[in-house]
Length: 233
Length: 241
Image (tube, rainbow over all chains, first blue to last red):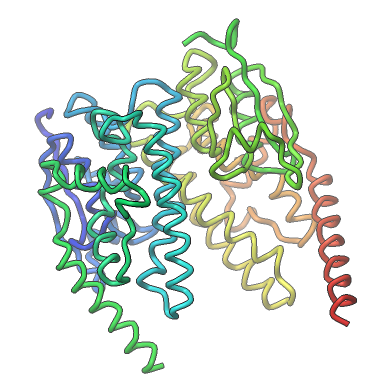
């Protein structure tokens, strides 16, 4: 890593989007300062670094902020081309396919997952789970097509798709506990189930994937708070 | 990679009114690339579309030497990378500038497009006013983006049109159509002067004039869709009775 590179990451420990960025930084072997944020009392730094959305993660590189986890991951890849393994392949078509599936994780997988634990009614949660399982099935097909028998979406090494989905692992496992049903089921989606275990074993993942029990407790607290607020209204 | 010369077969599956397909047409135009354009009937999607984009079944799809690329922003980046020798680079060179461009492109799709939908759906004047106010907030934010990205130059991309100009510019014809349909100026001289000037400049570009649909046709399309929806509702009423 070039001398003089100052990296600061604004985040919160439960955020899977922050985890994605930490994964990318770790895979590239980059050192950074992590500054934990209180989202109920946002810091001046956060508000000035992300005035549009006021959200984490924000990566600040030599004073310049980058926002949105998928934008940050691509930034890390482009700003540090010599460090660690490439997170995107060289061929333009392969790159487009990788970007497509990373976007799919956000547009379909994450979007479906949120109501499975934040849904206000059992119907909402069930509908979320249905959409989520459909997305999981599609991702199984994608992994089958893209990896061609290799361990990751990126082949032998991890790419932006692995990072996008990998950042969600602790939350997926926590949701399995809360919902009482498997999301990455070894019988229905064997490739993804194997991929999860393999990804979680990576050094970079072991360092930053939040503890699943901690995430379950956090989620339960949030669900209880939301229920209390709803009944107070 | 070789430019638009021998061996590069490009086919674009699109729909004439789609702002997302328009983005891709503008990008191809800017790069001076030849391609076969296939107009899709979205009510009766072709086998080619369904097999090229099985996940979303949406246009645009760019098929390059038989290999499909989907999602308009991803296609624009692909065109820039696969044809890096042709025309100007669409994405800026500096990684931070690229990140800023991608950030705003994501904002445009997440916020601007969704801010417009309620205007089309509004049934009362109140609903329309509320929807309109939301679009003004988005436009004002984009005005700041333009100021930040252009640094005093004519386009988001600087002196030349770039990725972000193309991403926003895909909506250009609909900006005019919305004004005609609802009397709503999306970009107005008092609130968003830079965007007003930018839009005028953008639609004057040869590469854009070549491919932009006529806003009057979009107005007719919307009216036809409204009429069809109303007729279907009437049929439903008749059946219920």
